[in-house]
Length: 215
Ligand SMILES: CC(C)(COP(=O)(O)OP(=O)(O)OC[C@H]1O[C@@H](n2cnc3c(N)ncnc32)[C@H](O)[C@@H]1OP(=O)(O)O)[C@@H](O)C(=O)NCCC(=O)NCCS
Image (cartoon, rainbow, N blue to C red; front, side):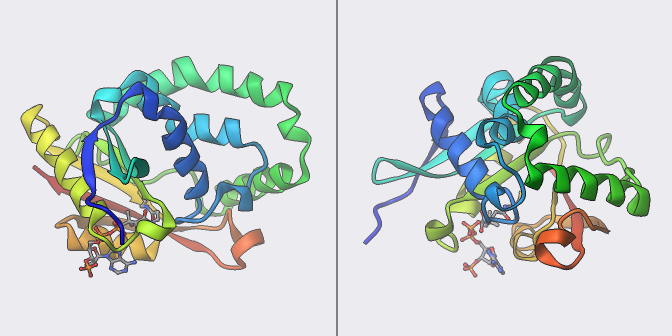
């Protein structure tokens, strides 16, 4: 019988667990290992900005002394992307280069698929930053889904954003299940497109949803 879930602010000691869950859930809840070889690099890309530059906007869910999920957020997506581009991209690129990541077949196939997707679908999605400045990523370990933990993390984050005077939040997801979850939490669908970069794994295009909520 699982214990009671506790939602609390992220602490530096949670970083390894957050990185582990980020890797284990990156492909619509499945492991990043399905599409990429190089756990350190993918964990950096997915979580480093949030854990190291904006830890105050991050929350974790605990059950029985283990972290089972997280919400890592940014109050202002434009500012977060500027820091990501300035401080994170180059060091992570060199880390990837040094560890030979660009020579691995799985990664080369992914890079090729992304370039092909750019040609087919273009890079642009509509910009919702002005009306919905904040953003976040939310992931729960597979065995702990559908236990109200995602809803509790969202509530903690939305309360925090309101307290901080942030008036809107948006996020992107490729998962139909996550789309249903965000609708159930009062988010509205702002955009739906499609992406082809996981075709070599999933043999289909995936939707790209953007959901938003005014606070
Ligand atoms: C999507 C996710 C964050 C939802 O968190 P969760 O803890 O599993 O969801 P909750 O138990 O809080 O669900 C609350 C409500 O959302 C809806 N919901 C949640 N998951 C759903 C699903 N797979 N299909 C349909 N509705 C769903 C339901 O209405 C649910 O209430 P119910 O369980 O009483 O029916 C979690 O399942 C997850 O981490 N999935 C994999 C990674 C991912 O897709 N992350 C989102 C991308 S940012």
